[in-house]
Length: 426
Image (cartoon, rainbow, N blue to C red; front, top):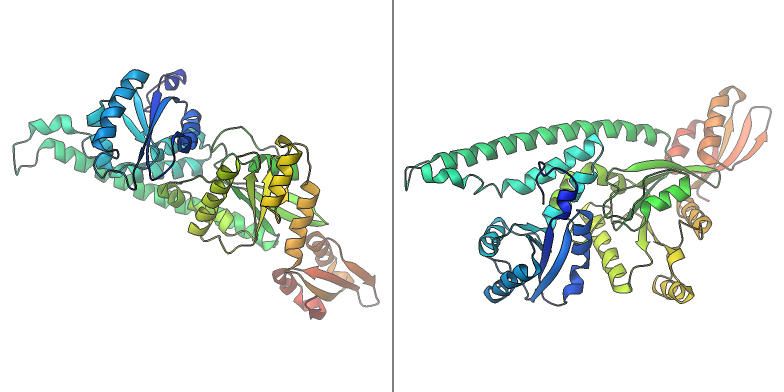
């Protein structure tokens, strides 16, 4: 990818990438996602080469024969960079560049480049820098080879090696510093989260593949104005908005999109961001209903794998198939047959959003318990708080105070336990 000193944005477009992949099965169609990633990063694609093999070659990723074929293809297509659909080891990357004579980037490098361009908050920028440093630390060997010829021969410590070690030490120091800063940012986020938890508002997280339509759905359901673009990883920083439904308030959070082969460095670095999903009471798994069936199912599997990796797989989940406005009648029938328990919606036209809101209410209603409270007239603030938290309730004014019958989440019921007259599950 271009260095920070590349300059004007149009310089990026000068990059012409030849895509490669080593796969046990499949052809160039398997590279559609890499092509989208490169497009998002501002890189044109001019060709692709796929080698059928169970595992990539340990030294050069592709076998010797395919490597010769690739060299000719690069020249014919006038490509000036090679993009690999997998994460390369430092050795593979170094050997490929030596053999091909052009820069080689892997999938992780492309994704990190996109994240660096799209990170706007202070936390997001720290997370991206941490992921980049962790990824590049193992790749620093060879950055200072122009100094190695000044060394004193076998068994001596030349300036080249000394510079590499210095560079690595500085990188490790910076990584430690970034981790400390992220702990501080995470602590601040925890304070804000604790304030939200004090109200015990139900938390709903929008999770899904990147560009599945989560931000558009958040805007349609809450009236928010979160930026939306038809671009991978447009949203990196979590956004929380209030959703009012059935007389109750819910917290609806849009989170970073997932992707196939999401680099482990990003899962680690974005731990605080992904924590918003892990701590949710309900996950809405947003799926792009306009995607071809095989792609759609692959995207769903990728999201489920990341949810498992971050420990969110046990949280109740509702599948929401969006972009219904892009489908004809037959396409809708096919979706309903394939996802019989899913909610089918269009955030653009509003179709299905009312039903989705009712579904959210139903999911939370299952955990509510019915309690009877007697709140003295002197505790007007408590009664107002109860109205705000519970929405609908049955109240009767008595001589001793307001008698209330209401369904509450267990944590909220505990807060009003001092006023309880009868309690039990409904």
